[in-house]
Length: 151
Image 1 (cartoon, helix red, strand yellow):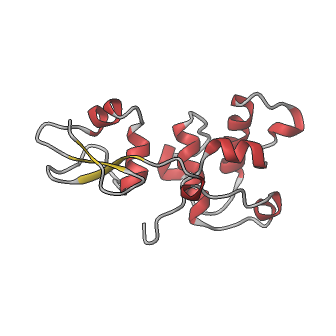
Image 2 (tube, rainbow, N blue to C red):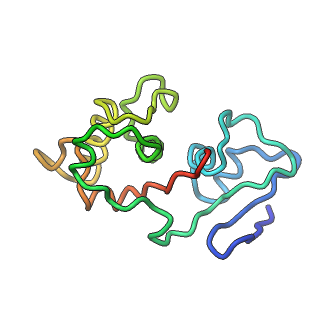
């Protein structure tokens, strides 16, 4: 596999004959789901020869959504940030969504809260610190990517 660095921050790969998203994910030490999120791929079984994929993201803070505050979640937001958070939770094995990723919607709800509580417990939080409401420490560790406009 040949890696292309097309920007200063992200690493790209151009699909070749015989490639699968699973093989590409393994090679770049990421997940199929993360590649789907970064590249807007709805069906992981369909990629095309010549397609350019983001395979690694720069981990600079500007690439991630800063903690929006507990008050934001209390306002029951409807935002693409919630969808990106849901994808990251699934990547981390914290999935209480109906129908797996198809069940991830943009409105903060009990599925998001339950999945986030799993994330908090995975990080070692207990009691009120694992109530499913994001706090700065757990949010920063989740590294929710900034949503891409129009995608």
